[in-house]
Image (cartoon, rainbow, N blue to C red; front, side, top):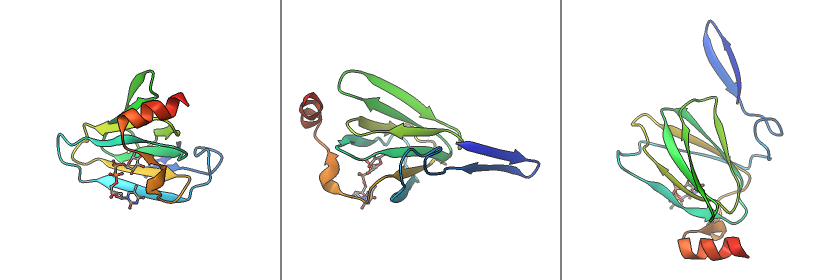
Length: 125
Ligand code: T46
C-alpha cells in the first residue's frame, strides 16, 4: 500500500488500479478473533480480493491445489491479493488483529467452494 508518513504518523492509501487491481464493490473486516481460531477453509470461483491487517497480525495459508504458501500479514501498509481458485485458511490472529478485505463483487454464497474435494476437482477443470 502507498504509505504517507510525517511527524504526525502514517496514512495509507488503497486506490483502484494502483494498489487495488480491481474496482472495489465490497469491504468487510474481521476482528475480535479468539486465540486458536482458524477461518476460511474455502476458495472462490470468481472473487478477487485484497487483504490488509490494518491492526495486529495474522497468517493466511494459500493453496492453489498444487502447492501451499503461508503469508504473514503484520503491517498496515502490506496488502495481499487473493485471486479466484485459491483455497485459504486464516489462523494465528493476534488479539488486536483487524483484517480489512477489499472485494471486487458483492457477497454471493454461490461463488464459494467450501468443500476441499470439490475445490481440487474445480481447479483441474
Ligand atoms: C474470504 C476470507 C478472507 C456475509 O453475509 N457477507 C459478507 O460479505 C461476508 C464476507 C460474509 N458474510 C457472512 C457469511 C457467513 O455467514 O458472514 C459469515 C462469516 O463468513 P465466512 O464464514 O465466509 O468467513 P471467513 O472468515 O471464513 O471468510 C471470509 C470471507 O467470507 C471470504 O470471502 O475470502 O474471509
